[in-house]
Length: 195
Image 1 (cartoon, one colour):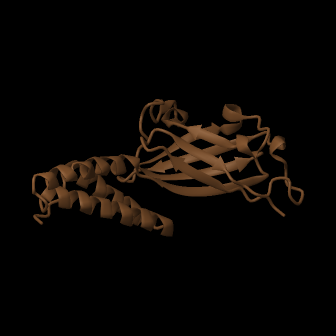
Image 2 (cartoon, rainbow, N blue to C red; image 1 turned 180 degrees about the horizontal axis):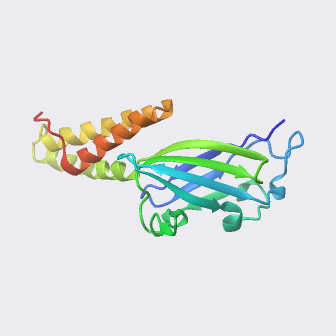
Image 3 (cartoon, rainbow, N blue to C red; image 1 turned 45 degrees about the horizontal axis):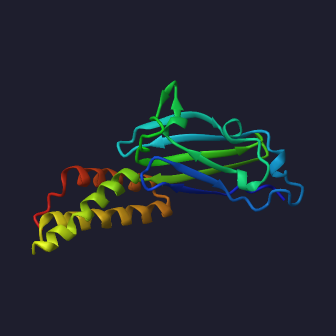
């Protein structure tokens, strides 16, 4: 039985920390390696933004950063933008937000024991900007202004985010990036709808 790595991804609400958790269930089963036998663990990352700019980052050596690993609970990796470097240029520092886009990741255990590819959507910037738009809705209601453009734009933008995140599960990357570009324009400029 071959080792089948599985990962879970969580982004902190402020969009400044990405936590990757190795949830692989078949370590040490059927001749597979034990967690303590991991001597190399890497993450290769390519990020494609809404304007179709692709940046390939240097391999992140998870073993050097977080290893050696005593048990599976130790296979928990907290990464911030300072961990992502492309040709000497950092994505950001530890207090910067992750850019929105599709993140193509390859997780490799011991060079050739197991490899797993993941495509994930990070949309923290537009989500947080939309939450700021939604946050002011009660103020409009308080003053009896329930059907104004700001309220309808905020609700429309949130609906677009929900649709984009649902599309990301299907795997239509081009459509997801197009939706992300529209949402970025909505949170920056509002909609052109007169409602």
